[in-house]
Length: 460
Image (cartoon, rainbow, N blue to C red; front, side):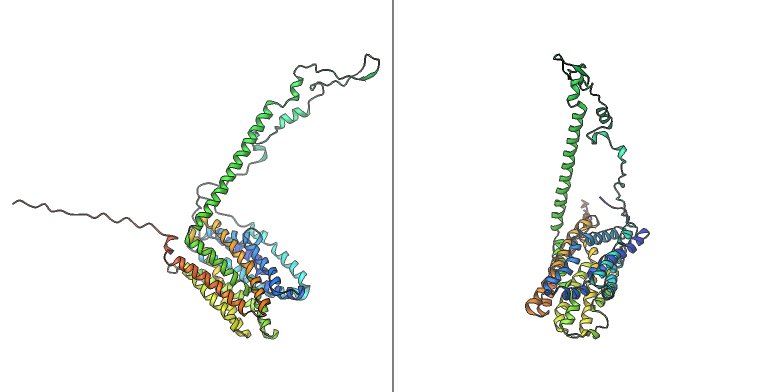
């Protein structure tokens, strides 16, 4: 199955705008959950590891591509890749900045809402704002496949009779049967013993007994319906087998297998700063008056810049997007290991900006996935990768919180985070060094046949 040629514009720009606002409304609050995390610590009085589960599940479970935010993220990325080809990096960069701009705005908005309405009121208002996603989704129109048109909806009155067990005509006939047709008599007669009573006579109509048996058309329709259900179950089972086969074929691709390990480790180690950076500053005794701009806001705005610039950079033909993605992973790992060395607001702000910019590699991740598996398998492959990304998002913050509860410092926790991201980056690097060409390789042109010239010797 293939899609129509990507228009690289037209309605695609509408898709970019609504996808931007979808990610803005969907991910703004979950990514800015660091502001709420500090409030939850004070409200519940629990350890950092247990409290971190609230924020990690708010962002992580959604990315499992089975609930709320995961479905929206996969939908916006997939439809954008369908509408854009030569400008795909720019389009992905633009839509992915929606979550980063949302992070920047929601960080300040949630803090203000908490001051005016409290924690519960803040969450109610954020949930009400998220309902605007319905309007954005109504404008998303997927491209038609090149080999078949969209199926037409069948009106109920046009459904063939063989797909229903009961026919309306037969049903009406059964309802209008008289008691005489069924062989019953309701006449009151005097019985031979002189008592008045109701006499039940044998059916006078010889064919009346036939109505007590199931009619042949009914049996035929039951058989047809049973066969139809069997065929439907067989087709569904075949679809399931095909899905499992396609999933297995994806993991035979060495680059894809390394990619899912890298994204899992990246989210285990790279997601905690966006959730815990405010508490990191408080644990390092940074004064509230020194926090002129919230660290989470710096992280968010630099993520938007990183997504846009990295997306534009990915469109250049001389840039290998996989090597670019690996570079962002390795530098992110080094920056995470440097957090324990930062003890002031300025150094924490600089590291937040660097980590935010590098986290912008989310804009090129769909680009990398498309280059690895192709546009036809993008939705399938991206759903699998987002599952592992969501798993990493869910596990990362609690692990970091548990390290703090165990050691009463974030130092070992961020060394662990940096090690995870570095490990994922080097695994992916080892996978792509010898075989990057296998993702989009082209068969070499056959060599021209060698022509030999022979000179016939003369006998003169």
